[in-house]
Length: 304
Ligand SMILES: [Ca+2]
Image (cartoon, rainbow, N blue to C red):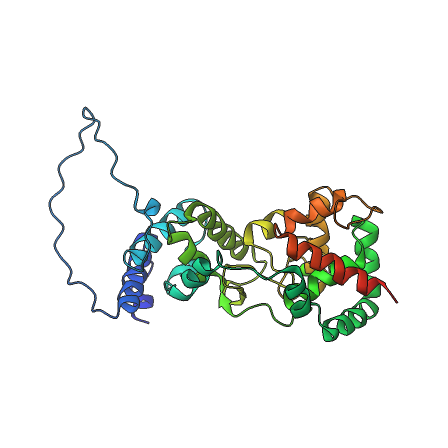
């Protein structure tokens, strides 16, 4: 590459170059012609100028403005300690995804009843596979339950319902989903925090940004953690030194138990409707239909 022959380049120049390339690629338009910078007035310390709008704080309901915002967000992330390499790999070519916004808006639509949901999700195949997985990973489940007090059949039910035991973790690049939702005005602050978490996870080496592929709203791994939950509750349960919720079943299941324990799971107590543990499950998923389904699935896995 030509830039390698140019020797060391400042972070600002390199970032600006790839942002310009990304914007050009994103819009399909040629890069704007360079314009000479206007002469700057000398700094005036005696006058307090009102601060202009922070470009990293802008939001929008369409793709217009997304690329500029991504560039500003990346600059801010680097100022907060994210390396240029991580910022470039995560954000350098990220595109606005209108499909994510469509799914976000459709979320408020009609929801299935408990009966409909159970019929669709707790299938005979999932029940059979759940029992097989409990046998196959008996030692792992035993260690997790001993440490966190969360029953193995409940963890297996979450694992099966979320991703079919790790097989279907989603197909949306998490940074694309998170950046789109972070730019969208509806829930911008929440998803800016999630995007920042994802960058920090990549920075600390849990999983490279290219392997952060998940559900449409940025949930990741075998039990579908949002990046902020991964940061807060993710643990290395297979002892390889990384918290890999995508590739390691031990890390994903241990972290799920750690999450529930962190929200006050009561070991040895029931978890059906009306129990304290059923309330803890609302920290995992607010939907009562989902929670009742998990409990039913778990009870069927427990029954011989
Ligand atoms: Ca690990």
